[in-house]
Length: 466
Image 1 (tube, rainbow, N blue to C red):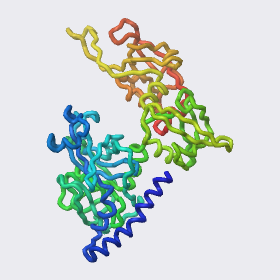
Image 2 (image 1 turned 60 degrees about the horizontal axis):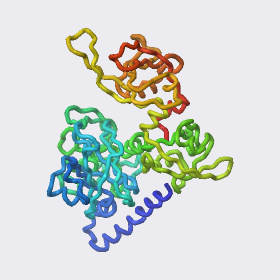
Image 3 (image 1 turned 45 degrees about the vertical axis):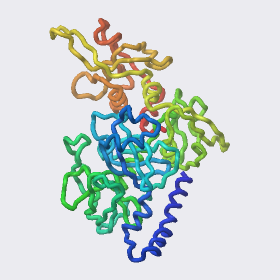
Image 4 (image 1 turned 120 degrees about the vertical axis):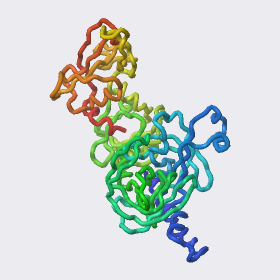
């Protein structure tokens, strides 16, 4: 993180020099808008989203996109991290629910005409924000962030974005208000939901500005613009930087890999718990160890550890420097995926949602049911000890303190199963899993058993894991 801080300071230190150079060259022609664009514009990108086709699989597909096809979605974004992470609106990179990430080709264009590919890391559709990663190993100029509460109603603000397809357009206005509650369109455009605490500005925000930055006269990011709000004359809205930081920290800027450890709640990156079957345990990390560096970058807090881990992908190895009993040690951890964490580290089995047809005697033809079928069981886990087998179907999960029914809740997806296991009323102490051997159509009666976990404390904080 120190290197990123130094990089940010370097850009900050350049601003007065660039502004004075502008003044020397152009005198009174230099406006706040011109100064801000000179210093912050290099961090802004145009976002063009294409539907993948076989023709774009050539060696240099960017050169072919313009003559071959038009983007299905267009917007703006801003570099939030010099390692190539960009924030934009979720609706820009997910224009239709029928399109998956694999179907999309995302091209980012910088003001110097450099075009790069990017991929979606995560999206928060409630706040209409998405984090992209540039698929090129290079440092990029990151935008400077204003302090969370550094807002002045009436101050001049500047927006940079791809307004109506015109890349790196600059508009300005004033900060008209804060803490506005407004309704924004959902991604599919069929409904709206309310967001609270947005910034209001009269700066022109048009389609194509979506996801671009709203800046103060120092070139600091105070919000992310949105063009998905209900139309109003001279009124535009932006997600404030305080909320952007919160969403980055809590949702978007999370590691995509599993180390199998928890960091303590204190600021220092001290390991609180280690999953006994996770990657960290395999290299000998223990509770009480203090992480001091991630791949050579010094870290002082748990958040800095998570920030450094964001760049890694499943299958990568990361070098961890740590201290134990005042001695510095080094290990290399082979990182697993979040899916492996859920299947191997939590459930003990692989599963997927499927449709099964059952002749239940109530209809002249078989009735279809959505079920969660086990596709593999890991040896030595609680699931293995229960006797679960591939082709078995999970019927339900038992919750305590339910006012209706027996407490058994049906499941049809792995996501739903994990959510129920994390539920505060999940029955850790009794029979908590019901399944049917061989599938719904088999003659075997439903079975019940107790699924146990290596460490319930790790389970309770699984979303905070690195």
